[in-house]
Image 1: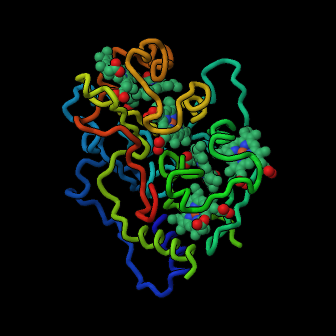
Image 2 (image 1 turned 180 degrees about the horizontal axis):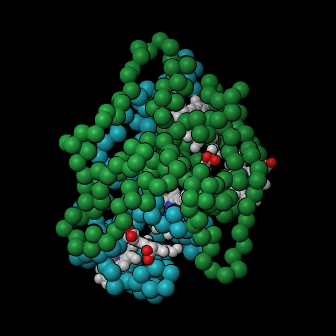
Image 3 (image 1 turned 90 degrees about the vertical axis):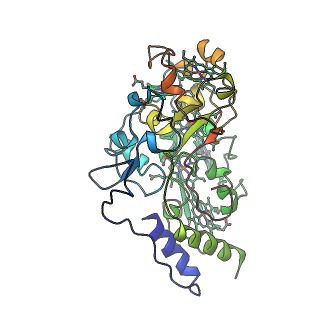
Length: 188
Length: 126
């Protein structure tokens, strides 16, 4: 899905480039699928023992949850990242993560969209405070990442790709930058 | 072409040739500042598992984890004092510290840092 969106966005401005066929995930294949677990809707996650990170010799490994077990039940997201639409997971109540563990912590939520318009050939970027403040506190972004004034932050896509501004979370933990259209969501 | 157009093409075409293979789960963090040198496996912290149970603000605001891989100078001593992972892994909010191998679960030789970060293969870190 993300690939197609990238393709659509890219081909709009790169008409001179030859067309490239995206990789298409074929049917189940025992060799390719070794070490993976497939969910009912066809998403696949590596087993921990085959993910290149976990030590298969660790006798406690069996007690850790396989990503497919938990993520396979959550709303489907793009093919990158966790393959989960975490915003939808929260909105639909598929998950109910705690907002605080200390009593008396103030839970701050804000419903305010900011539209970024310096997007060259791309659709405008809509930044929704509501979905962000459901997960994050104001202090996670203000003033650490963004000055809380419209237009006060001078940055572009290269900064985001470098892991700054939006890219501090998107690309690391939140949905990755291949999903252009989730940010570039408002047509001009 | 204007620079922005070139950028779009670079990112867009890089996206097309990406071959999604062999990676650990997105947003896992390896913590191996002292572990392996001290004779235990590197630590693997899974974001996907914790975010099902806690919003980001619990760790990155209430509990004070800095949002930069490697920026928190975590030691086992501090954890035993109830700091960092020890704020929850106390046999109350979550299972306790006697389960070494649940946290110390990484292969030898892993470098500290965020894992499985999906790259566009365009310019920049991501």
